[in-house]
Length: 440
Image (cartoon, rainbow, N blue to C red; front, side, top):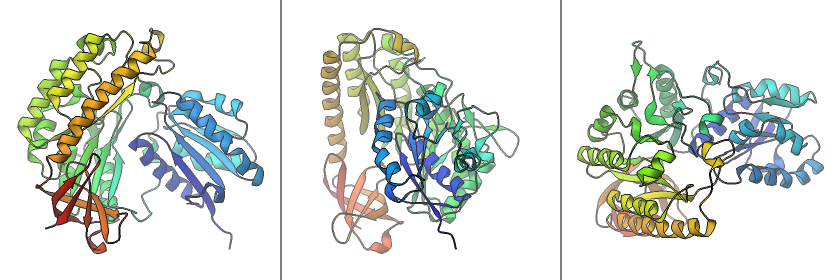
């Protein structure tokens, strides 16, 4: 009997790439590939790339360079590049790095089996089209056992917002929403595999507008309520959202749907209306704060996280102070902040940058404020009870680690039988990035 071929996937970037990597592995499973964590054991190495952060392409080329000794030691090793850098760079990747056998964009990875047939025949394979066909129609059904009780489910891809700093519309294409019935079927399959919590993914997930079984277009809130009816599914989350698509029914769902967790990632990027306009965000700081107030009216204990870009072209000290002010008013449980870096092909890339030393100094000030708020949110949990979904063993003997409703890591001395289960915990200690508690 022929030994199965081995696939190693390295995933960069966002949760959607994690989901895509899992689906690519399942797609190549049709060709007889099994996954391995060891690149040196692999017959095929796939780099599933992200193009959002600074020097993303350079990092990919650097990783490809590190694969040269593996190729020299194992001449039959095949190497592929997938994801958003593949979409943006295309044939240039093969031209710059001849050891690459395959380049596939995020909308065409359902074609991987056919592409691998060409590669195994000694050809190069490149596919970065934006096809009209829905890749999800061609992917195999979920078949492998769940490794943990949480899972991602892509419900929407692409973005029509065209923020001036963002490459997503160019690498992922226009907004497309998957049909409700297929999503419900995939969610049920995940639950059958032991999944208790599903995070709905989309570049702009609350713009979801999928076709429902009744022939109507469903909103994200309506999809969430349908998922709420699945027996065995205990928790629902979604990310990433845009303020302009935070609809009335979605705000209401945060207050009325028990399975929808009280945690929301809602990026604002800046607190300055002048910079928000330059970013083409199409909302003001006051619009954002009004949405936050409505969400907290619906769910007073809602934990919020956000994204911020510091040093966007044209940002003044006054603009930056407006960002600090919106952070103070919102009170985040967590937030992600980055110094602006130009992405080739975006409108903002043509504008003059803020001096690097100024942007770095502002970023440090913003991150200090965010850390202060995060630590306060963590300390506020001490003495409270929370439900924890235990996911894995901790670093210490007899310890399990899981997530609270608010997406905080929680360490507890607990029996291994609770792995994959939700249990009530009283929090006794807090650190910046985790909590410690005892079972009730």
